[in-house]
Length: 80
Image 1 (tube, one colour):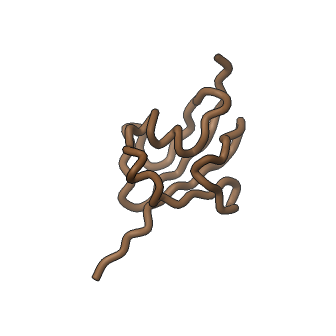
Image 2 (cartoon, helix red, strand yellow):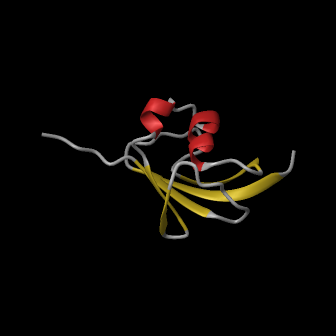
Image 3 (tube, helix red, strand yellow):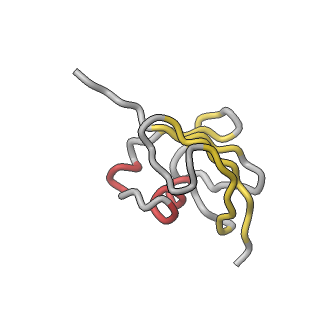
């Protein structure tokens, strides 16, 4: 399986064993949602509320990550 290098920045309450800002190798064809569920072990029910950008542009959870991408992910928090 071909691997690609991607830079991630996780903002807010999102936790990661890799820290908040890191570069990691993932399988080619991985989506942002796959990364959150397969690598960070978040449940799909939670991931649907996350917001992400790739190269500063809003991206969906089904966006395929490409080699060299800069991905920022955060979970908007609401309160009352």
